[in-house]
Image 1 (cartoon, rainbow, N blue to C red):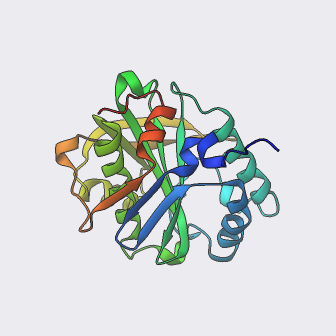
Image 2: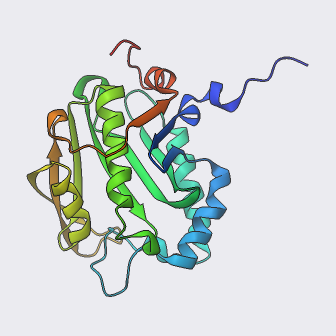
Length: 225
């Protein structure tokens, strides 16, 4: 039998590991989907009396949630290229799953050195500083390991928790974007923020990364930063 390469050697993002104190992040795999869907069903992501934080109510999809989630992650795997990529990170805190953090290239990252972050956190894990720590970890990774020069984030107008994290971490306001709802009816405004490398308010823990060189190669960056 010929040598079988580990999946991490075939697709470099699977080998990426980011840690920051008690927090661990790694690329999402399809086998994570049952756990993710079950956690959303059990705990939810947002309260019905809070402003809707997304453009569509994907977390309320019932039985279709797992299928939709699986298709979304497979699409991210299949469309990966140096010109267009989205790093979807499974986040755990002290060993328990808490949410998803993502980092997405803005156009061709090799030229723009710009990316956008987004995340969601299980409802019962909110308000404990976890969302702040996971954002600090991925921002440090983007600046220190990928050479990012601009990182953006946005939150729905009214989503004060998300916007407060951006302000706390050193972002500056960068206008508004208007988006049509996923069902094509109505619109919402998103408040945008922009962060430069020297303005990041870093975590109280060091950020440790393994697999960074292979990840850089997967997005067309030279190993020497």
